[in-house]
Every structure is written in structure tokens, then in C-alpha cells.
Image (cartoon, rainbow, N blue to C red; front, side, top):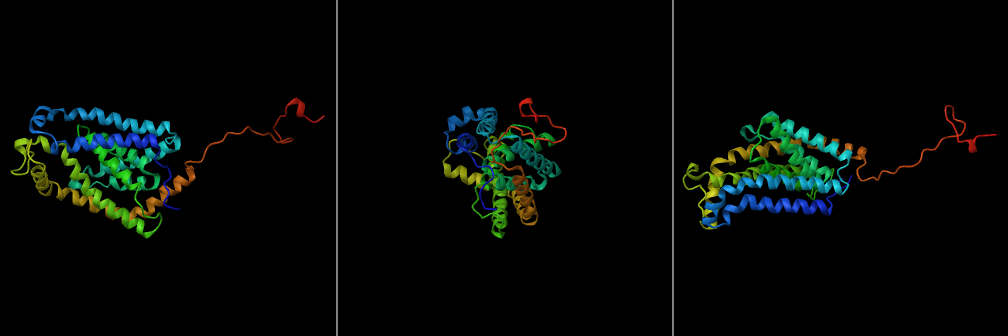
Length: 285
């Protein structure tokens, strides 16, 4: 099987994912680009992004449906990926940063394509949050990050089925395990205020370089120890169990025959077969 994705990303979904990406970038990076007065006056407006992001994520799913990509077979595969990811999240619930859920998201995105990878990542996080009681204002940010991981896995260039694919996916799992924490911290870091460690907090209106330096120190001191185990665990899972899971997804995709149009033809009745009846005009005289 070549590196062709089973379910390609069509332009309506591209537009929807791009909109989610733009809003997500703004939602995560706004502290670095706004003035001090704006940060003080509108910093508490950030939770309103919860509804906006959830709405845009729903638009992604709707775009896939209207493009004809989310049929019953695709929805079934998404359900399996979301259930598997949510179940793995339930096992660890992020303890010590260990979150094997991303292993399933990466494999699903790799096999099924970037659009389905994005949706499966978002749904896996949502499923895990419902199972663990982790629903809160951080959830849409997690959905964007996990969806982005699945989307990125769907556009990796390595040829399918080779040894290089395994190592490319393992490196991707390691990098995204670190990147998930690096990005996710930004949803709450600006609001720590006096609770942030000395020299590591957000300073409204400070130069970009200063806030970046503060955040870099904050990440190294508080998050890296959690993110590194996440990345290492998922990289190891890709190396050890990745080939088997890739084969399972690809076998299921071949049997589901994604992309093959369904053609309905009138049933034909064989003459003389027991238990069949023919129209009067066609009955033997």
C-alpha cells in the first residue's frame, strides 16, 4: 500500500480546519502580542473562546459530512478510534504525563488522512474527558491540540509500510508529546498572576522577548518533566505496537472500501429458479 491517504481532506474541511487553526493560534498566543491595557481589560474574556472553538470543531465535522466523507463506515472507524483513545486516557488520566491516547490518534491520522485524524483526535480527548470527569474550560484547547496531532500525522511524508515509517512516526510522537504540553500551558499561564514562580509569570505589556523568556523558564521548571514521559511513551508504543496497529487500520480500511462509490442496480430474477416468480409476460407458455 502506498502513502496515499484513505480519506483525503476536501476543501470544505480544509477551510473549517484552517478557521479552527487561526482561532486556536490567537487563543494560545494572544498574551505575547497584546498591550498591557488590553490584557488587563480583556484577559478574562478568554473563556468565551470555549463556545467559539467548540462551534468551529462542529463545523469541521459538518464540512466532512457535507463533502460526503463521513459516511456510516467512516463514523464507525471514528467511533473505534475515539473509544480506544478515550479508554487509554482513562487508564492513566495524564498521571506523570503518561498519555498513550496519542499513540492511537497518530496511527489513525496516518492511515485515514488528516481530516479524519483531526476529528478523531478531538473526539478521543472529549471521550477521555467524559470518562475521567475532565470537562472544563481547558477541553477545547486540548481538542485543538490533539486534533492537530492527528492532522499532522496524516500529512507526514514517509512511505507507508516501510521501516522508515515506523521511525518517522516515533519521532513525531516524541516531538508532539513535548509540543502538546508546551502549547497547552499557554491556556492558563497568563492568568497565574502572583501564583506564578518568580521571573516566570506573564507581564502584561512587556516586550515579546521578555514574556517568551519567562514562559520558557516556566515550561522548563514546571512542565518538561511531565511532557518528556508522554513523548517517550508514545514513541516507544509506535516502535513496538505501531506496525500491528497500522496493519489493523489498513486492513479495516481496505475492507470498508472507503472512496468506492455505492451503485444500486435493479435485482435480477433467474428464470426457472425454485422459489422465484416471473412477470406474466415472461412466464413460459
